[in-house]
Length: 351
Image 1 (cartoon, helix red, strand yellow):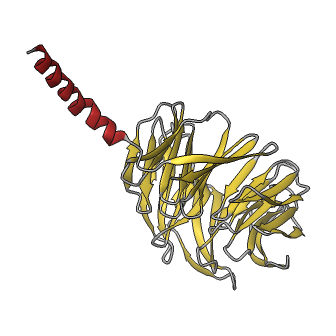
Image 2 (cartoon, rainbow, N blue to C red):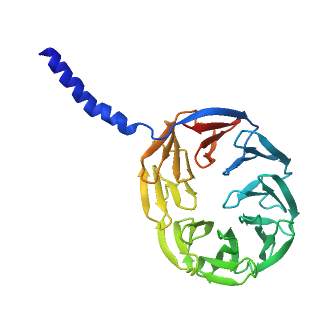
Image 3 (tube, rainbow, N blue to C red):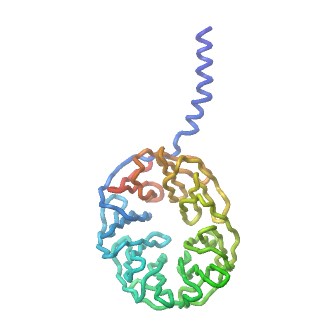
């Protein structure tokens, strides 16, 4: 009788805990294959082909086999990186300086010296750079093509409005420019959609009062997402109309974007689609990083690295030392995972 009772208890425990273990089993497994030692890393960009690494003195590119394709001394002070939407081009510039370098996955393309200090810039999928230049009494946007040739695109009277952020449309033919105006009524922001070829204004957004727009991101469905110091806006790119707005709580510490999703770190992680609709949220203990890559939402916290799908299901988990993580993403159509940490790149293969 005791044996029967013991068997029944074990069966009950399996139904409760064993089934739960099956539910939490990773759907995708990654196994470590290679680790490449690197120098100090300031910033990085992961493309489908490999990884760009930038520090105070050089920019390097490593392919999916961990081979260093090139290293180039950029010669910039406090360099910032700006990438094309397809990841094939990276521009490196000193904001407030007068030098911008352009690179592809094959190496260095050109250096250009701008006539005025650089405030912000954007790169399209064809390697064309749009740079916001600012001097004492005016600002303008200049285009630099693959030969490094520049031409003035559009002037702004900074006594009225100042360009703060800029972004190419996915097709590379149009520019979105966020402008801030200070007048007797206070601070006013708007977004203008401009032809990159001719500089004519195609559309402009509603006026946004008492806010400064500092980021622009194009997402699917011709939605341009504008991030201010108080709200996130969804703008219909062809018309310029604001179609949704979402307030940012004071506790928001960071936001992350790709073409389909964006994520916000509150005390937890909230994930939204291009329509501003919350897809799911993840309750995590002090998440330190969020990355979005190939439809995976990657969350880093004190317990490890977790990969979620758009339904909020955990697809995979890794438990390396997460203290010095700089970036995480996929190569070769989800067949490789790369984790970039200070001092090295770790490559994982999908099993």
